[in-house]
Image (cartoon, rainbow, N blue to C red; front, top):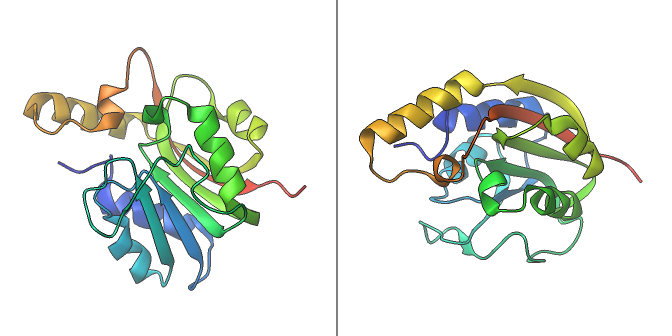
Length: 174
């Protein structure tokens, strides 16, 4: 089963929408198997990936809620189905904002239990693109439940009513 709804095609879409140039440094927060390495390479991006339970030797073991990297170290941050399941979506967004250089780009797809725009603004981001992909997430959710194998964290964490969004956000200039 794919580790997030939309699989590699969704990752490609986030990279396309980001407007980042080849050579940009990307941090994948919650990278899991490191599948984003292949996709990032096809765009000419350089990638650093971190996960609490990495499933590949390419992925650094660590909790992105900690200060693992210097502030302003990355041009872009990618996270797919990870911030909500971290247990502290607000802190995850604040860490992404900290890790991004001025005018950096957050490429995010995740579930939210309320309108994500106020939370993103409070965390230092200006939303440039938002797409509601709740129907895609519901299909993914049902497939995971049906198969009952290797249920992804974004399914395990979901309790109650949610929407699933694909977002491109720019770090606000201070």
